[in-house]
Length: 357
Image (cartoon, rainbow, N blue to C red; front, side):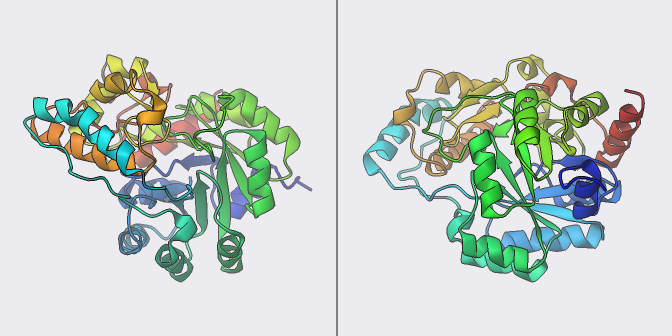
């Protein structure tokens, strides 16, 4: 019999044919992308952490109209921010010169632009009503009552971890599988506490550590861009691989023209981990915003997602002025390997590459 951590067990648990998961990139992974991936035999995902319950319902409904295959819905489980008016006011003033260069004014105040799932009752109700096959957590796990409610609805739960300790916390919380998010990964680092020391474990080391110490399936994530990478993750003992950056250039992605151009440029070779854009560490293509952020002390950046309020306003001003360099152009270290393919074709290509590696 296969062990509880084997690829076969995970595939059956998720209801998919291929050990490939398209990462739930909030703001990038569209219902069209997730549906195409799901219909191709992998696990398609949408990120709803940055939207409301109403927005989540709309996204799930559109996905179901496009595909009857299982899909994953991702929520953010960060600790709700504590307002610090002095830090927030100083942040606005620090960014004011950038707004001025773009011919725009910064916000007068910053707000918490979206709720954490740990306190969002409307989002929990939306998930319990829709009952997607999978719900995944980033930045931690929700309180026990929310976990139990989701499990009672027969929803498969997956949590993202950047360390062994975080992974063990997720297993104790009740997840069915753990994503091993290596430091190579694009987008927001899944650390539970962004102010705690970070060992910055790479995907290979973290995957092996979790495979040897957990009794649940492990999903490798970070720097995986092709079938060879997926196969390598499986050889490390992972039950599947999660790819995000590989799907950004797909026509179904919500990445704008500036983001796509940056991904195809030399910036892809120089990704940067920054807190300046959102208030949490996230790997981004090298751009104007990451350059500004490199010289800013961490303690001067407001909490997530309050800082993101300013970041999104600055990006909007930049786009209006024809300057795309202030976008949250999240990407992992494998970015130069990105391919422009429809999502279903990319899944088929990954599967074919796995057979010859």
